[in-house]
Amino acid sequence: MKAIPIIAAVLAVLNLLSFCLMAYDKRLAKTGRRRVPEKTLFLAAACFGGLGGVLGMILCRHKTKHWYFKLFFPLFLIVQIGLLAVGYRFL
Image (cartoon, rainbow, N blue to C red; front, side):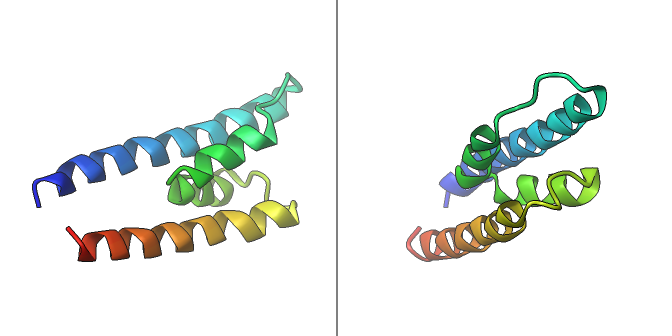
């Protein structure tokens, strides 16, 4: 049970990073500058940053027209919640 605060802190950092990447890419898109690669956004969301990615899509209104973002970011989040629930069961 001592690991839970550490895991929560790591998850918070990963999701904050994912959200910030989405917000940064949105800012770059508005100014017409070189963008964050989509594979980087996907990697951040896949590495337990699903919540940050989904919130970045919603709050920044970014990548919402791409079907693969609308499908896979929430899917990452659902899978990550499931993995965390299973992991919590065995802690």
